[in-house]
Amino acid sequence: MAEFDRERVEAKILETIKEFAADPSAVTLDATLEDLDMGSLDVVEIAQVLEDEFDVEILGQEREDGPPPQAMTVGDVIEDLAKHVERAGVLAGG
Amino acid sequence: MLAGKKILITGVLTRNSIGFAVAKQAQQYGAEIVLTSFGRARSLTERTARRLDGPPDVLELDVTQESDFDALASELTSRWGGVDGVLHAIAYAPPDALNARFLEAPTDSALSAFEISAVSLKSLGVALIPLFEARGGGSIVGLDFDASHAWPGYDWMGVAKAGLESVNRYLAFHLGRYRVRSNLIASGVIRSEAARAIPGFDLGAKAWAQHAPLGWDASDPYPIADAACFLLSDAARAITGEILHVDGGHHAVANGLGLGAADGASSEPSREEPTASLSLSGDRD
Image (cartoon, rainbow over all chains, first blue to last red; front, side, top):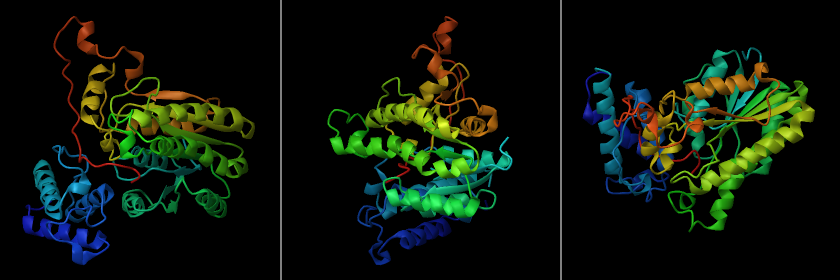
């Protein structure tokens, strides 16, 4: 992957969350996945979208214990996944 | 090994799924494959399928819907005329039946785990009988996790796997007359997204790597996939009702001793620890 562009990665995550949410207008940084009727499968699929978009491997990376996916806010998901994309780029030497 | 075989593969969610590894290896060995998925998981399965040759089509199968089995069988009939093998990689237990909630788990949750994870092996096998017959026989392979022990955190999923082991034997018994074989692979722990739903998984993966005589890499499902392809192939034509352990030999040794114990060493054996993954759950939620 090219140099890590946090802004672009975060924008892509937000865009994908809006795409997957039943009601895109309800997507705010403070909304939890449960509020949006989303769950762990959505997060896994967003991770796959990022893998395809940025040519990195995220699934399979180590992850600290955190709240269950449903309790994560949109902001949490963006931060968490962006961190994984960044780390994947570092691991790949990109 | 599988040249010309038509094989149905369930349970592909991400490229970390055991089902994905089986799909990839089956293609490698010459099989033509189709996948199944359902509901919310479907778009994920389709996205993952694009990483396979073809990519293979994804057919609908919710094992709690009887009509889905009929639709699946008729779709496969018009597509292939018959089927040579199927991978059953379907398991689910509601969260309140896992994570040390064994004693409190509602009966409905225990039954749900049993229906989806064990009875579905029978349903799938029965739905495919005419398709297997059209090819002169067939092979069913299911994914198991050694149910002869109680595992921390696994709870009613473990009970469902015990059920699956028995369903496998009865299926072998009743389907032999159709020249259909049924076998399970009891694998070591694999860090798939589904496994992330099992609390204490990382601890288990680490212990597995230390105790298995051959060691164990929880991030590599390909040894399981190769064994599944063997069971799907004609090389396994006289094997049915079997549970093949693909676990680095973990089942054969007493737990808790580790390699160091045999050498009189007190330190833990130095094995590279597999990397952990995103902590996400569920083949089905």
